[in-house]
Image (cartoon, rainbow, N blue to C red; front, side, top):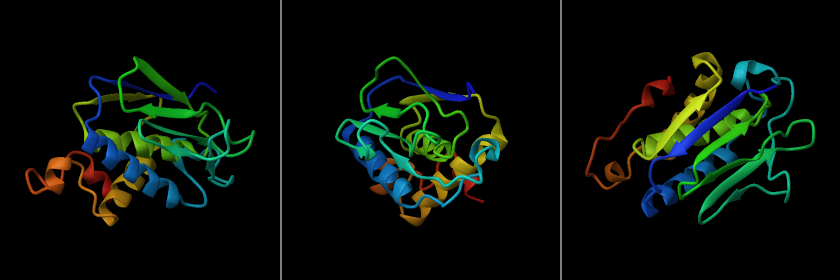
Length: 166
């Protein structure tokens, strides 16, 4: 299947944006549900587990976030999000369970730095909503604001995307 998500950075994430995003991505990875209904629920009977398909452990590093589905049957393209722009990026998930985390990390990136990232997907709203809700819920429960400025009392407390917390 060719189901994929694409993104392009218009600028680098600032240090505080990137630090916030890596912490949020780790929180998302640590709180994954056992199963996923993301991307139309095509693999909803398969467990949701992640790894770095090449190395064995997901990475939430100084300058990149990297992970894949666990196992040869539940992995597809490795998701890699970098702090610095690197042109047009994409991740084909083939609707496999780790698609939930791909969508959630991209949504968190947008909520944290909406002017830094442009995201597109083959999925429709129903396909993406589980990942959006997962990102918003995790950020809300962990007390992360979508804006680093808001975390310091300098901006709005809620930004675009929080409506998907329902």
